[in-house]
Image (cartoon, rainbow over all chains, first blue to last red; front, top):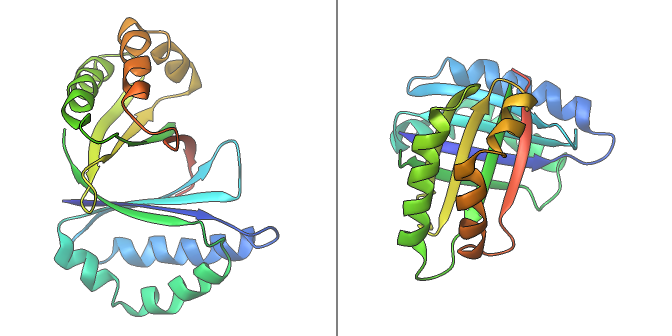
Length: 95
Length: 95
């Protein structure tokens, strides 16, 4: 299993636009083969910090995800709505 | 529900010591009331990046967790083993 934590710091005034794209990513990604969970979270102390926590069966599923139509259409738009300091980390489970 | 993502960048040579403390935190925290899940992950590209992803029923459970004997004993030791740039974020679920 591969877990992805993708943390975005959304630019001021862009939160609603970001959320709309994120919502579509949640709905479509959950339908993909190899997607175990795909959740969106908001920092309780800063509503402009939005983080996806995703569980994928393996790297093959992650790579297929990154070639989907919705990924290629939405992710560049989301990148434009967030600060460059946003980060994505791929993890393996230890416990 | 409150989700905590606690990312630690462990100092060189301190990984095994950090893992031992982390393992105890996983075992004991899972027994706490209000703990839904408590998992430890390792960055697949950098084995010194270790992240807890925790799900708690509510803030009351988080606050109780932070007063437990194992938290008060282990967390200061873990802090000494990691870089100051480590971070902890509290989230609410949006989807």
